Image (cartoon, rainbow, N blue to C red; front, side, top):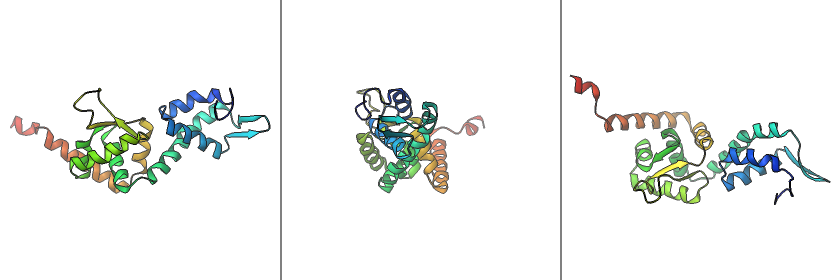
Length: 181
């Protein structure tokens, strides 16, 4: 309402909120992208949708994908790699799991993820307040963010990350076949 006038595009607000996980940064960028794509236009009577709300709501994931891609492209390459590895781990991940995926020191990865979480655009701290995991566990703000980041990652890098994660999991759990022998 502040940008488009009272009740200008209020019907669109729930779809934008859902698609962005309520992240203000992503909400603003998603709406900017809708305007740039001319799905929302201004005329003599003010702002209005130039398509049905259903069409706009269905376009939001693609629009948000463009926003995330631009945002990720502007990250430092080491931050981008850390997020790609985190996406391979899952929606929630630890600095240790990402470090294993990248074959990096945990402290180094913790600094990268901590800086990204403080910005709060793509990831945030996970865990209960006061939990020992809080400073080491993270989660993507929205599942769509993890999916889009994973899709953007170069295929060879994705394969290496998955292989390293698999190896790290094998080392972390006892070999069940040896127990039976």
